[in-house]
Every structure is written in C-alpha cells, then in structure tokens.
Image (cartoon, rainbow, N blue to C red; front, side, top):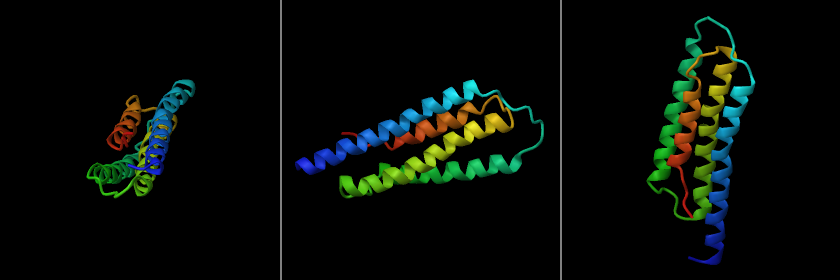
Length: 122
C-alpha cells in the first residue's frame, strides 16, 4: 500500500465518521422540535420511505462485496450509499415533525445501520 492509498483510506474513514455522526444530530433535532399531531393517513410517505430503504440496502450490499478496486473508487460508492442512508435518517425527522409517529426514531436507526454496513475501515 502506498502513502497515497493510505491517505485516501484515512480520508474515506473521516468522511464516513462525520456522516455517521450526523445521525446523532438528527436525533437531537427530533428532541428539540415537538412532534406533529396529524392523525391523517400518510401511506404514500411510508411507501416512499420503504422504497428508499430498499435502494439504500442494495447500495450497502454492493459496498460490502468489495466492488471497488481501490480507495479512490471506493469513495464514490461510499458517497452514494451515504446519501441514501442520510435520506432515510432525514425521513425520520420529517415523519416526526409531520405525523408525530412515536416510532419515527426507527428511521434514524435504519440510516445508522446502513452507514455501519458501509464502514470503510482504515
């Protein structure tokens, strides 16, 4: 492993760590903003989230298979998977604010789990 590859791996780890840490920030936002009080049926919202979860899982699985040949190309997959994981976690904040669903924190857990599946190592 060359020095350039080592630095690239460290940069990937830092990027992953910052994005994974953002899940905690989303949780704090959910604690500070009061839950919504909308008793309406938001089936389309939950179906959209389910589709996003499936897409996120497929990207994370691809990363685990080691489809990237080096650390630089791994970053592209890491960013794509992280965007989808962050979207799943942010949907938890949206669901909390809009519907007040008491289990909206599960979306944060889902986003964090996908981030853990993508752990790049050092």
